[in-house]
Length: 156
Ligand code: FES
Image (tube, rainbow, N blue to C red; front, side):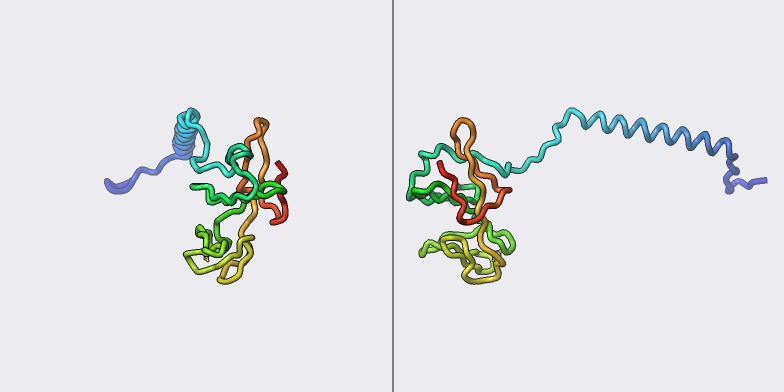
């Protein structure tokens, strides 16, 4: 006979009944939590990798423009338009323009020439050139997720 401090043994039938109720409860709570999340849009709050740059006429040949807040440089010449990432290929710091037209990284001292080729420091490779395209309304679009070769020019 069980004492006051010993729990009563539970029968197999009672145990299976309790397990059934607990399983049903967990399933119902899980379903309700899932339904409660449905109205909330499942989107990322981060800035899109593709962004609209503006009209081609905003970047006439001979201009070299840094896009504030996007860490991208737009180089335009007679052949077309190219976009270069200003994110260091070492650990991702933002490079800054040097007096000679090249770039330097404030974090660990990498240096890049005006074409983004590394000239000093720990950066393992050149700055990334990015895909440029045009939307149906003629606006230029830069895709920071698509890397292109340094020679690839978007012909406007
Ligand atoms: S992040 Fe640019 S050199 Fe390290």
